[in-house]
Length: 152
Image 1 (tube, helix red, strand yellow):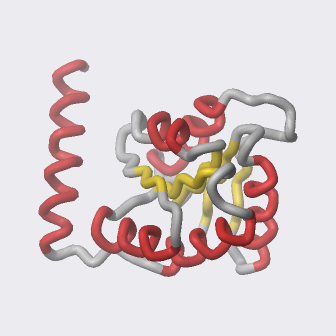
Image 2 (image 1 turned 30 degrees about the horizontal axis):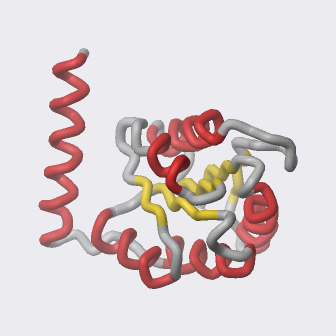
């Protein structure tokens, strides 16, 4: 699986741990920045990674900032993205199964790098269940399509 990953400075240690972990599991990892612990603006890296997922050039994304909230907000501005902030493996599994989430957001200040690995593993191991959940996701994507069309 190709995974786009990005962080700001507060998520940088987690991003580096995740890159190595995911590559060791056979995933292709596309690093969308940041490139070190110096201050970095989270929207730059969130939007870069989310665009890759939105265009189908990556099958999933993982974004990490201090709280995970900023990354989630930024990524969800990209058409086709359903970014979910998750703080534990159970939430990561459920958001894939029920929401067809395609971008995982993590809080670097709220999780350790080891916890981030466990959350990412749960996220990537799960898949969309469809059924009644598909109807609900279709309502979201339908609204998104109508909204973007009307703003043209």
